[in-house]
Amino acid sequence: GRRRSSLGGGSSGPQNRSPWWLWPAGLLGLAAMTLIMCLLFEPSADEFCYVFGHKFGDACKFNKITGFACPQCGMTRSWVWAARLHFYKAFLYNPAGVGLYLWIQIAGVIGALRLAAKNPNSYPVSQPVFAGWVLFWFLGLYLLPWFARLLGINPLP
Image 1 (tube, rainbow, N blue to C red):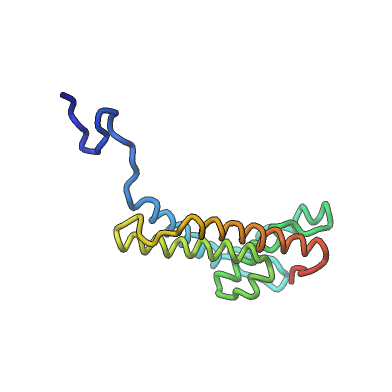
Image 2: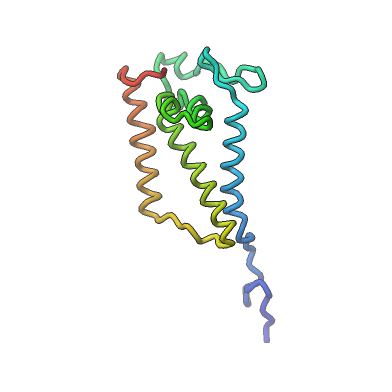
């Protein structure tokens, strides 16, 4: 007879499965890295962010070419302010930015809870909730504010 692998692969050979904790740890790591990076960026009165005293980025190329704000305009500043818990200011810079930042941080909390429970399936997020959030983020926080900016409504601070 055939020997079964201790990994549960049966006759088709061992399965290449990642350790159970890899995905939750990845969520936690992404959230921690995002928070740390955002805290390294310092907002400034000149509307740019600085990292270790050096200006980060330049004026938006899309804006320079077209004269209009791009959908990502204000995204970095939104994340930097959200990391400092200034959510209203972060929302003014880019609603999609603060939404995405919070989404990543919530994913990190879920990852940490799954690691603590030693169960990658604990604290599930249902597909309808996830799909609803993605739709809301894309239409309500990303596209709608961008179109409003194109019409001169809701300009960047």
